[in-house]
Image (tube, rainbow, N blue to C red; front, side, top):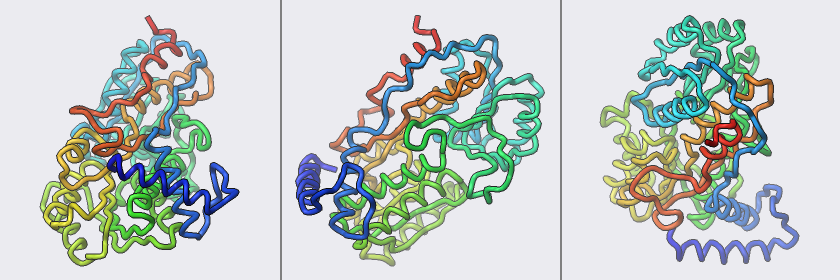
Length: 386
């Protein structure tokens, strides 16, 4: 989003709100193109400013002499590497003995890693992109022993996408603040909705989207649901095609070829949505560049890890990302486990996201850094500010 484009959006927002007199700051979604364009523009403005806030300042004294296990789906994936490493950093800060178990993106290994953690005396477990059903049996054993279980980009066995009837095995979720609190599904869907709002705003309410998905991952399914539901609120917008890729295909030319074919088949498309960073790098960005339409496509990326920021800086097939600071999420997970240890409800983490492109909140030559010093906030809450 260029600065001149932002000025146009701001003017359009003012005009739309004038046309829709009486609209509140949080209007009820409607089917009117003018009304929904106004809502999309409002959401985009909020995402530019950032939807996160300071973590709760409520004192949460550090529990002493605790052993934490961090089960990562795979440290060879940046979406697991960053938050898992942040958990280890936060655990060291709070004074715990923490051990990282690397699942190497092999789901068959994950149950054994949970069992190892239990056998090694873990008192808390943080699952990073490892959903409950994949490790249900050892997780049930961990819960029976009183071990505190929290997830990062991970979903409990009773999630609606798993049928909603299995027993819950997580101790709690990170608290994302109002209005969703500890509902990771709603948080993920709101995140996807905000990405859709930006696409709607950037295409003047005429989005024709190629939606790239990966239905292997529950977090992606929730995010895509929020994106899809929001696009349908714009009566002059549509999803013209969907491409369901698989993580295994990202090491071959197959995923990029699939996206490129859809772009060729749909010359009317003016926007693309990528599911996550690895897919952007291996499939979406290469396809957009090879299509010869990079200048006319608005491409919304995945989580906004550093390699995606590089693509934005270089104008290589990616227009923008909405970044959830994954290192902050790692610290919030440790804070949640600590609250459980000391018998408190998890505190508001302040987590949210921010819209990044080449001119609005432009990325520097490294990973994204939020404007809030969440590390200092958590150290103060834990009594570790020295």
